Each structure stands twice: as C-alpha cells, then as structure tokens.
Amino acid sequence: MRVKQEWSHPVAAIEKFETSADVAAEAARSAIAVLQQAIETFGDARWVLAGGSSPMSAYKIIVAEYADALDWSKVTAVIGDERAVGVDSPDSNWGQVTPLLFGTPQTSTVTGIRPVTELGAETAAIRYNDDLQALVADGDTAPRFDLVWLGVGEDGHTLSLFPGHPEFNEDDEALVVPIHNSPKPPPNRITLTVKALTNSRHAVIFATGAGKKDALALAVSEKKLPIARVSAALDAAGADVRWLFDAAAAS
Ligand SMILES: O=C(O)[C@H](O)[C@@H](O)[C@H](O)[C@H](O)COP(=O)(O)O
Image (cartoon, rainbow, N blue to C red):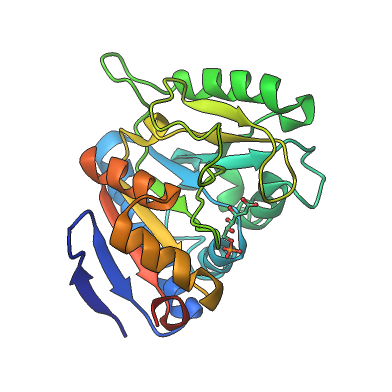
C-alpha cells in the first residue's frame, strides 16, 4: 500500500510504503517497466546500479520474478560508486551486486561496465570517466541513463558523495571522480558526479530503515544533503525522480 504526496517545495514525488520489502518490490517492478520502455524507444537501456542492502533485495526480486521479462542483452549496466578494492573483496559493490543480478542465464547477457578499482581510485576514476564519456551522444554532455538507483546513507550521502566532504563538488565537470578519506570505510572510492546524472530519465531513491529517518527528514526539509542535491539536479534535468520510503524511514 502506498500514499503518494508531493514535496512541500517540490523537487520530486515521495511515496510511502509499509515495509522495505514493499519498496524493493516496487523498485523491481518499475525497473523492468522503465528498462523495457527504453528498449522500445532507443533500442537499448542503460541502468546505473546501486550497492547497499536496500537495492540488494530488489535485485533478488528481479532475478526471481522478472528474468524472462526483458531482452537483457539490450541492457547496459554501470555502478554509481565503487570502493577502491578488487572485485573479489567483500567491499566491492560490483562484486556484491553483479553475481546476483547477472547470475541467471537470461540476465547474464547484460553488458556490464565495471570500474577497474583494483588499480586504485585515481586510475579507476580516469578510466571509468572515459568509459562513460564513450556513452555520451553527440551534442550531449552526459550519458543517457534510463534508470538510476540511489541508496541513502545515515548521514545523507548518496553514491560516494558525502556531506561536508571537500571532494564533494556539485560543479565537477568530470563524470567520475576519485574520493579519499571517505567518512565511511573503505576510505578510497570512485563515484559518479552530479554532472554524470544530468541526462537521466528515471531515478529511484531507496529511503528505507529507521537509521535514515533523521537524514531523510533533513534532506526533504532543507535540501542540502548530497542525496537532496542529487535529487534536485536529476529533477532539474527532467528526470522522473521517485523517493520510495518505508514506514521506518518516514515515521
Ligand atoms: O557508501 C557506502 O559505503 C554504502 O554502500 C552506502 O552508500 C549505502 O548504499 C547506503 O548506506 C545505503 O545502504 P543500505 O541500502 O544498506 O541501507
């Protein structure tokens, strides 16, 4: 069950669900619809994946219920942020997400673009920036992304854009930057920038869990935290931005 309401100073729609499982189910269902529509419109679909436990539940639903629902060979997936570790590390977002999401015969045909974070944050950021630049169409300044999934940290971070961090610069011109001294370990990472998302069509923000309540309330009321800044930039760029709250995060 959900209740849809608009922001008091609108940047996007907030939707409230009872449980995080309901959020995951809606994220999974809508991902398939958005990716299918992109395939029909453009001939392919591009998806920015998120790490974290909330999206993980949604990936599980996708492989269990929707593996047959798409021609996955027409889907390209990138990761929104990554830790500067090898893919075999338990800290690797790619290493957590893709064995699950690409783990069925059907979904194994996805084109995954993985950052080479085993080479360190600097090199990985340069190379991933190049990889994403290759997706930018003539006349555009950012890749067309059809779907962007974003998690939220308890401090209001999203991607690896942390509040008050000196390397969080909303005006970064690069599509991908290295991050050092992350307040949440591991310290060295790469992240997509705000600019990287400015040609996105749909975004889903996983606003789940009691631990996020304060940050989310602040994000909604003051719009200063990175998740709010990213949401506003997506909205300004014309994306359909959905914040999917569970009751614990909304209360
Ligand atoms: O940066 C990190 O180290 C985390 O991966 C983080 O970005 C995570 O996505 C959020 O904290 C939401 O996590 P949950 O979905 O697990 O709540």
